[in-house]
Length: 215
Image (cartoon, rainbow, N blue to C red; front, side, top):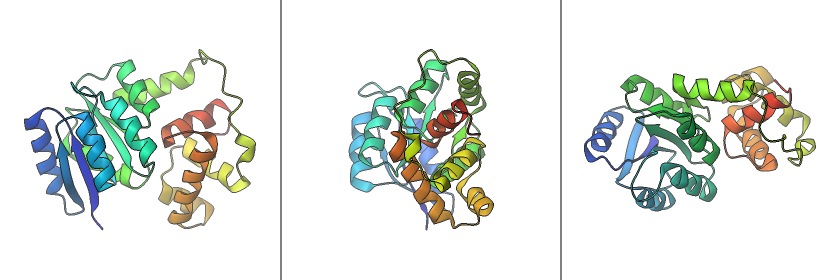
């Protein structure tokens, strides 16, 4: 089945161009375009796309706020954030809101397609700049204490195995092969892990695991 994508960006030419290029891929269907954050949230709820490409800087509603609304309403929808300037704050805001990936707008088309496919498959895709921010955050001592109240003890032994492999950067198909279970079972475990830990994305789960020495 084709990956159903919603493109949200308030720059008409860029939005139309990226939608056209993605729509030319045999395994991707662009189901709609939105010119603002509010419309993007509305269309995501109505159309239930697999992946949303979300501009972070829009006049009516910021992409991080729109991302949070979409993910809270339907956690299985994956959001890949896009921006022209990849500041630390932009990256952090997008990932904390629940984005599954982060792209600079000058990313080559091939990498955009890769990011969309990775998101649809349950994996994360970060531009080099975003990866630097995430790795830097992991290497720094946390400014705030680790949230001990997150109930890691509620995870089953299998879910802990999956969480460790997420922290190592493995995709669902790779985790399935490693644990000798089906990809759909891995997907269910990932959803359960995020729910039990109160997290919204694999990136947050990986960060959580690394900070607790589970990698």
